Length: 95
Image (cartoon, rainbow, N blue to C red; front, side, top):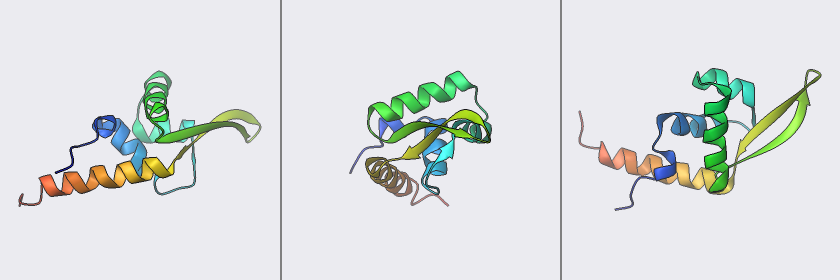
């Protein structure tokens, strides 16, 4: 059996990846609000996920202000899918 991905075990990271998989990209502030975390906490999660190639970021502007956009990579999609499959297998017999 494949193990859970250690990079996706933190609830905030799993939620972040689950949000990103449904869109092309999300603005940093939107992710922060959805996850209900501080800028520094979100930055650390994004940096950790970017380090293993699961997400990427780009600088841009939105409504006249500088912002950062975050997107999931192909490797990130695969890692999330595998992680979710392992979770489903773990809880398969739970009623």
